[in-house]
Length: 280
Image (cartoon, rainbow, N blue to C red):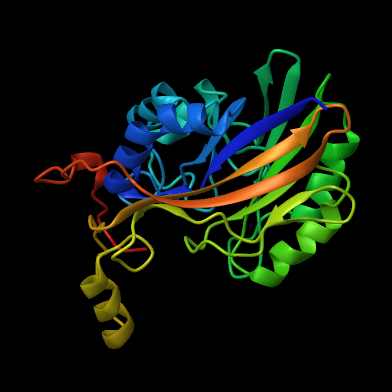
């Protein structure tokens, strides 16, 4: 049975996460036998969005494409880059005037994978209905592809669960992102779709979702707009490997992993483009 292995890394958060991906991805691809590698770069630039330089760094490390979510356009320098770099996806259910694309076909050697970046609506931005949008896309021809993978960037577990059942049998994988907390519910749904509620985070785990604890605690305790700063300790990589039968386009396996990142000391000072004038 011709099985293809797809590597997907969860939300890359700040410098710690980027360094971990840069150092680990080449070897990880080899160890997992991945045909393609996908990385969510939603929070790569100091926790908020992505920049062209940082995106190119992740591509050089071995990412075939990058997905995003509600922070896709936090960095103004990324707006033009979304038009120029097809490997960087913004959510497909943003308004059509928004720069960039929400889908891409990657792969080779007889296996072409359609990747769709999709944004949820519960507790997030007001965007087009993700259910109706993905239905329209799946009804359109995407060329000669063997399988489809959806990164559903959403806050609510219920919305992700609903999307999993909605897409079961229609895509090879529906992988949830956004919460930075890996869930232990990976499975193959009855009609052959690999599912997990959240893939998790690549970043510093001695933190609050990748940010320093003291700043997050002050924001919650005092209810003031405290600027959040990226954490640096206990850096880990979260992700999944999905096994796809390219004859059926459906998944036959999903493996979740949570591994320690290769050690590299953080820079003494944050990079200028990682700074944010105000906390979100």
